[in-house]
Amino acid sequence: MSVACGDGNGDKWFRNGGLATIAVMVASNGIVSLNRHLIPSEIRIPIFVLLIAALVTLVDICLNAWMHELHKVLGNDF
Image: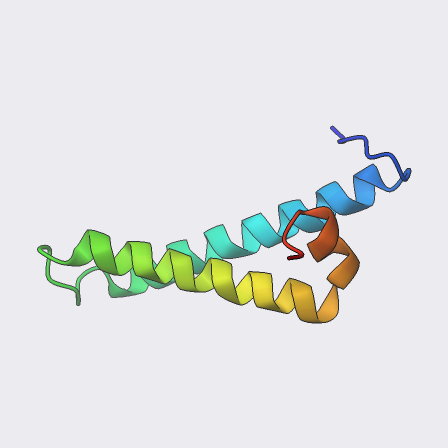
């Protein structure tokens, strides 16, 4: 499956954007799995939300630093 972009690089941008999403999902699931018994159940969901937000921010910063064109295509260039 591919997503068409006007510049003919749709497959490239889709793969890279998809890889960033998969990286966040794998990292967050791994960290959550390793720490779920250490975090009290009363604050588990807020901690997990903060963890995912931190990972998304980290990936966004990395994309801006090393893949700026992809960062712009994904709509994060202000």
